[in-house]
Image (tube, rainbow, N blue to C red; front, top):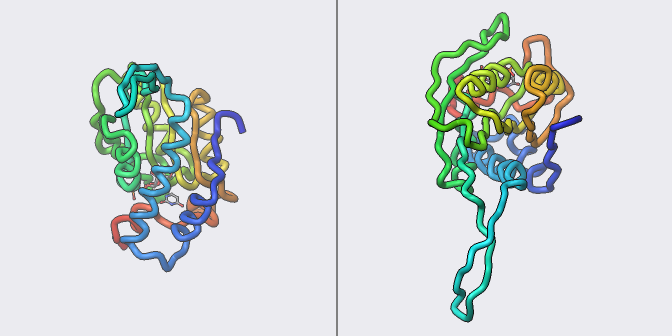
Length: 209
Ligand code: PRP
Ligand code: URA
């Protein structure tokens, strides 16, 4: 699949198995979501541009590499994307955080937007859109369209579990967006849930239902 990065790593595989397990309770589910987000972020930022600076170690002067001042925006799709934020900002403490509130209508599965607040200068930023679940792709596609409307040009979508249908839907409208995922599952059931998936990510993160 073009412009899709499936992060294949034993740590992710192990943590994802526990995340999927219906016996995993809320506290651990939250921790695992954040930990997997950190690992996805490591992969999603591997092409950040570096520059050389001069530093002094306790022994001598040397050149060293640092990230060349790329501004980053982290945009969780509410609610479930919130569970990934801390895992990302632990690695990127200077990143600005914005929010897009979207829920899926239960019957139509169409995205319904109820909130948005994004940082300025979106055109200068690497924009990391966070949502653990990419199912039909409606929510992510809507959020990316909104962010492009705010000027965003360099966008990556970080999801933990994706359905092939969701990847195809996002790329049908936004082929320029790199999708970074921990797993690509079999598909969707008749009510739009990912199989085998992990259930309702928002409910499992926040203990609702
Ligand atoms: C879930 C999930 C995604 C969306 C994915 O949110 O967090 O945002 O569904 O489905 P899609 O790809 O078919 O759009 P939900 O609507 O359950 O809202 P919540 O996070 O507030 O629970
Ligand atoms: N949203 C979820 O939280 N889980 C799914 O499987 C599909 C959409």
